[in-house]
Length: 121
Image 1 (cartoon, rainbow, N blue to C red):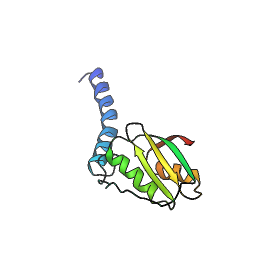
Image 2: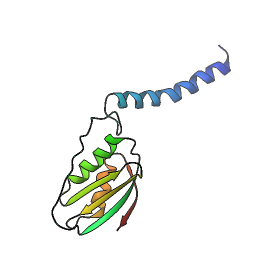
Image 3: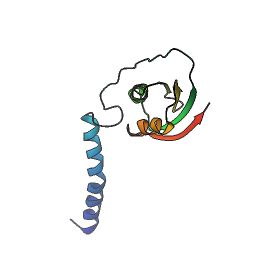
Image 4: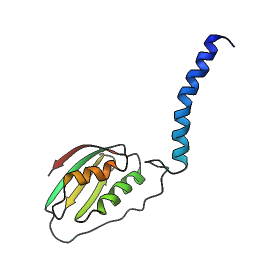
């Protein structure tokens, strides 16, 4: 084996190890997207008129499972009802009581998605 072949093998190993780790994590269902446990869509309803509505831009959602995860975790917050538009990469978050916007952002980012904008409607 000459030096060029050794360099090529080393480069391939450097590239393949992180890729294999990520693939194994994904296939075990530990990834943030698609490979994780299937989330069931839940429709939360609160009577009354929302105090505030936020439009939250979210990067990293790839499938309905991602959408359902974000909706479910936001809906777990008291006084919050969320509806995610996967194609638009946005969540409409209705607040039925005063809720810190940072709590909304932190909840989404703990799911390994990135919040890119928060707008009040």
